[in-house]
Length: 454
Image (cartoon, rainbow, N blue to C red; front, side, top):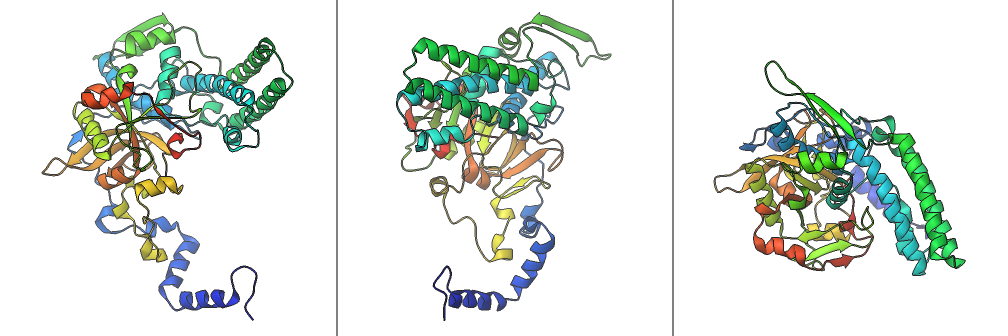
């Protein structure tokens, strides 16, 4: 008699019979028992990426490594910014301090989040409701967006990595994030209690500042307290190399006086590809409570057809300017070979199933894809008609994999899994630049376009 609980016994028997009836399943089972099955899903000529490109921005050293953190969005922007900076200062080995940006993002974002909790409390948003539970899920996460970097750099500037190097916690953030999440959830409860008990605005502000003092002290202990001024000493490319010195100078002035003339974040525009019918093109979007600085610029998305993103990225690369971009990196990805290409993988070969039945819009709607990672586009190849065929990608996972840390992404993969690029406004038509002036449509906090690159 068939079981009435769960899957019926008759169905299970049928599944076993059809499984055993296909000898290939036993081979696939043996492979998966001992190996990473992704290596056996790779197919033919597509599985070996050729890291040769028609247009290619000159490589700079060193290949960066975000280690055990979700700081890719920081690394990607600083990797793009260092190219023109290094050219101007005639240096061949340089990084901006990623840890410096990481510190200020943690502190400023905590302040932004406390204000968000307070606003929710005053609006009587239920703590067990969808919004507050979403905001409490990971209140100290590493990931971020382009406009968050804009806010930090505009206010706090930049410093060279040689001036403010990494600490253990900047390279391994799991434990410090757990501590910060603990405090932020505790502070949310306290803010809700203050509002419930009808505390005055002055009393609440006093409490909030005490909370922020704790956060600042914890981050300073974990990451180091960032410098107010510094002196940068370096050698240029002269033969023999010449000693140079810049400073003392504040991080703010260092960016605005010495980096901004070569990489101006104020001239960059984030264009995205969200093909859902509910998100028409040629509109501005933002996501509720997606930010990291009170009074700073909100996270803004200028939604465009994917071909607009490709053309802007290609034009930028041809002019020697790297392109920050956000994507779903794990889809059709082989890290060792450095490949992102749907044609390079055949899951049907091993499992008898396909994995790309949903289109890009449905992947967003049904939770199958969203932006997960930020990297830098540094090259591309084109066919005889000028259509891109593949893209060169600088990652921030060290030199292991691909072409010493660089990857090759097919143009098909770009179409399906790239969600945003950031380019200088000079590479966009005025009609698209003017869209920046539109009031943004506000998406809910949990919308997939609010995903943070990590």
